[in-house]
Image 1 (cartoon, one colour):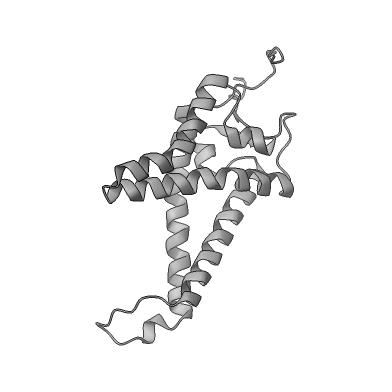
Image 2 (cartoon, rainbow, N blue to C red):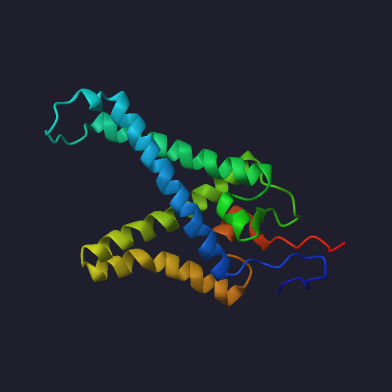
Length: 179
């Protein structure tokens, strides 16, 4: 049984706002991943390779790129969530990540929220890659956890599964009072 909401309780963010903010943040994260790739490419001597040759990146380059991307993504979310409870996409769509008592996330909360949400989004990314390769059954199987997350959000109306598991919530930022 849920506690009754009062007039001061913020409204839970709905599916559309979450999706729109996630899409916006996804574009920004794509730019960060490209910057990480360029930095690793340059650090690995990519500019000194002969023109016209195509070389697959080495294992060290791939691991370095992965480590840099994970670092950039973690810093992006942790800066936004710890400073104001919002990433740039969340700010644009007027939603905020916070604890149920309304306080901003601390480092443990940020890492817990990222750790709980990352598997859903990685599986969704792999599902979209499977779909692009016309492996529809694989894409469906990989997309089921995110579908369950969406169904949970719409059914329970108390946040997503990673909100529940991380002990956080995403709420709509109230409009400032008109003077």
